[in-house]
Image (cartoon, rainbow, N blue to C red):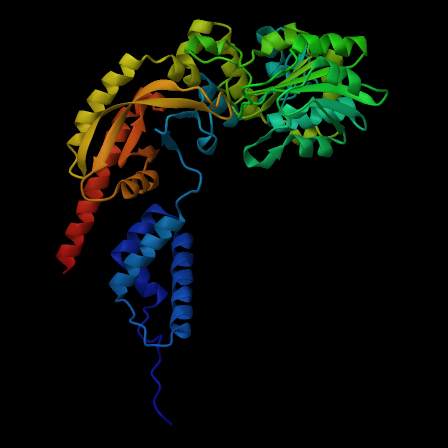
Length: 478
């Protein structure tokens, strides 16, 4: 019989690889079992490749193999959820977690997370209490509503309100407000899940009060108004003001649910942004229940906030699905801390990052852009870096046609493409997201808090040093 050589004979053992400097160093910084498991998995994959190959496979040397395995394990161990510096210019960037939290909110969350907390205990009586009391008083003070509760997001708030207030009944909605937003959230689908029945009225661009009145019958459960946060119908349009809907609803003894979406607690016209409804105005105009997000224009943690008449709030809280959609102690702590700052508008403007970003002057951003451009331009991998005027957006499905003047650092790389530079910065530590425009990477300072300026410069410098170090190591090995 012919001699058939063993194709796996050249593979080093697991123990031999673990003695290599690269993997020894990795064991010191990671779990020993993780490294051993990674080595075995990598070798198994390599054996599968060798077995499937139709030609002889060149097996790396033990040193080369150890380096490949160490790099692979390091990549596998990178957490999917990482801290990011948002230099995209989209303030409420959904993919990047929307609003960053204020330091006060972070401190409060940390305090609650590291131990026990009075989530559902009354400290005076020692008896069981309700978790939404942590924020109810603050929400009532800031919105003027008689009562309030909180769930895990505004989609949940919408579904719960519809189900609790109009199960099996028709809910009248303007056809122009049947929104679909990110993540395939479609109002008709939510309506169906709530077991309320959708009753469309009007047309896409025009809905009159008479359309609502004609649709009311003995099976009507509520009137719903939805703020079309992420789109606009312009031109030949007509909508019914909330106060007129409320008058019509009172005439027929029906509740009005006002889903304002992003949920402004302050007038954003002060920042040059218009057409975002104030929660307090919806309450003042008589909406029975108002729904909005906590992590958009409020600038707090992700949650859905429901304010309104107490008897409706109590009915929503008693709904069987409310428990499945409740928030935890960290969300309550972060929201409470954020809401407390809104009691002093000047303090909120300084401390809530969303508001601080919006109120930062163009002159301030221009000075920062000039300073950072000079520092970044000195990096060997950068051909040029200069201040660039631009426009930021609010994001998060709010005010899609309105822009905010900003200043960016425009970077042109020297030895790599702008796409490669963008990817390297995204994958670095810290991860940095910019936006590409006209063959340059723009780092929009409107969405970068000043405390991260040094990190931006260091990240580009470290990126260069890493590339040079890799080249030097290759040259030395040769």
